Amino acid sequence: MNSQGNINIEITCKNCGKTFTIRDLIVNIKDCYVNLNVFRTITSCCESYEELALENGLALRGYVYAAGQPHFAAMEKYDADDLSVDYSENDVQVEFENKIIKIRRK
Ligand SMILES: [Zn+2]
Image (cartoon, rainbow, N blue to C red):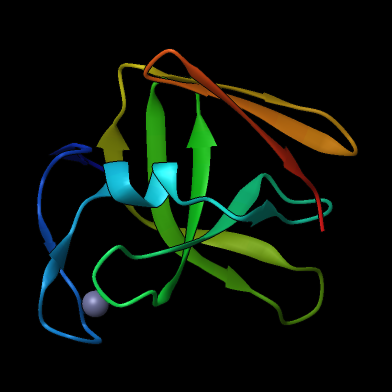
């Protein structure tokens, strides 16, 4: 999968036709799946649900495929220089642009 660019690239929303960025999605993360390193988040334009897998320096946009054992199908990859993620069993610590976001798994 090639990188689409950085997290500030504007993406056209399929739901409302406005634009959002991956940066918005990282700031808006709500919770993290149990057993999957994937976050649920919402777009800034119309609060549509999106799913993001985050790694150190990397954001993957895609969706959770729930047939059988759930897994994440990554569709697009973005460079996220200011991002680091520390996954553990019950929660996740995301460090992004010098802020620490703690998320519980659900
Ligand atoms: Zn929208």
